[in-house]
Image 1: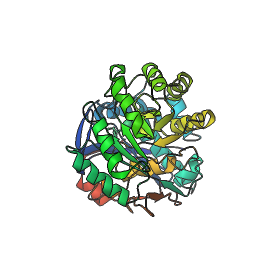
Image 2 (image 1 turned 90 degrees about the horizontal axis):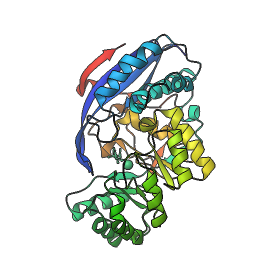
Image 3 (image 1 turned 180 degrees about the vertical axis):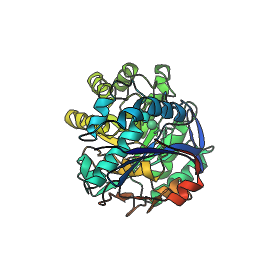
Length: 368
Ligand SMILES: O=C(O)CCC(=O)C1=CC=C[C@@H](O)[C@@H]1C(=O)O
Ligand SMILES: [Mg+2]
């Protein structure tokens, strides 16, 4: 595969409703749409780095810098046999996974289009539809949270994820359980807001039978998580702590988690996501696909990767209309049935780019 040209479009799209987590509130999503050109086709992906280093060490500007200085010049002079070659060639770059993932995922889309197969098929996916869940940010009031949960349950979402932080945790989980019962698949994401000193609070959550508690402790920890998992009945799911196949191997060996949230951007691309998926399958650790408030392009990649067999838990891959007044793809990501998204069979990501909407939210463009 020869990459003839790379294009970065920096976009800023207003979210339909703000999204609060333990580390801040997002009201608009700034991101980079990546296009890679080769043999008459265009591959698309999204660099999901945020505009501040709050989720991981990257920002949009750091990702652009690493891509421009260290990835693109080498990429444009290299013949790739397969998309997997990318992570081998650029394995020398420490972390900066979202910088790598944005380009690597676009190359996967290009490869699938050049070979006339869906991205799902190119990755080895075996599902024609995926069950999806929804992630709800920290709401100002309990009633506001319950109203959101009710709405998403009515749409048939197969997993409800609520955000928690110290002081906004047990009461919220209790309220959801009391209003909607114990049959709804409910989880909580703490985004590293707790420490082992909060053990008693976290143990209180056990009584509410969450399907998991995501990333309760530090973003770069697997040791304290293994101590915590021994104290909790609730399965711990790791998100921010898992940046690589090695992180996953160590966390599983230490018993730091019983579930892993795979995010393509966080782990450096689709090749690494597949490797982590395969390791988890071998070790009996179920995985699911987390979200980074993506536009439809990033969402399309999440749908493809979630079609792999060990993605057995519904991901945060909600419909476009949860986030955007208008998305940059057509058709929008929609629920084909309650809580279900159909995996496209068309070549590549299976969604077309809506250039008119890209132009509307475009901050800057650069071609390499
Ligand atoms: O994209 C979605 O719907 C899920 C968004 C979401 O939950 C998150 C996005 C980005 C960082 C975090 O705040 C959080 C997560 O940890 O999964
Ligand atoms: Mg998370």
